[in-house]
Amino acid sequence: MKTTIRLEKAIQKLYVAFHNNTLNPECCKQCAVGNILDNRDSWKHLSDTHGALELNYIGIVHQNLGRKFNGYSPLELLKIEATFLEGCGFQLPLHYKNNKPINPTDKDVLFKGLSEVISLLCKIDGVSNVMDYTKLFESEDEQPIYEIGEILA
Image 1 (cartoon, rainbow, N blue to C red):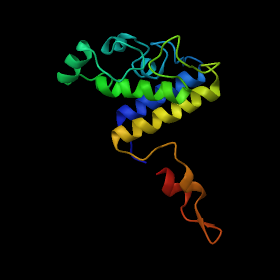
Image 2: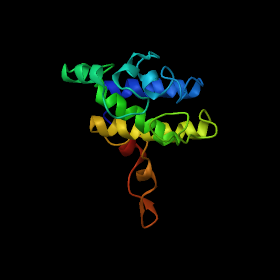
Image 3: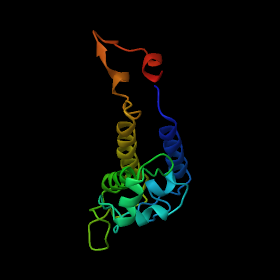
C-alpha cells in the first residue's frame, strides 16, 4: 500500500509511544499530536481548549500563513487530537467536569483512540485505511478473494 512520508512518520511515532507507554491523552506532550510533534506542546497554543476544533487567533494566523507542523496544518492537528480523545472515550473539550474513561492510559482505551486517529490520518492523505484488514477475510465459494500480497502491497 502506498502511503505518504508524513503518514508513515506519524504512525511510527504513535506505534513507538504506544509500546513504550509514553502515550497519555491528558498530556499535551504525550497525546497523539504531542507524539506526532516529537513530544512538544507548542501546538496547544493553536486553540484555547484541549480537544477543541476551533483555532484561536494564533492558530488562525498559522493556518492562514500555510504553516505546517511535521507536515500537518493547525486545523489538521486539532482534528487529529479531537479524534484521539473521542476515540479514547473523552467528552470534548477536555475538562475535569466532562466525562472521561476510568483509566485513560489503559492499552485498550489507547488502541481505540489510535485506531480512530490512524483512520483519520489515512483519510487526510487520501490513502486506504492501513488498519482495515477486512479484505483478508473476504471469500467466495470458501476461497479467499485476495492474496495477502495483493492486500499488503
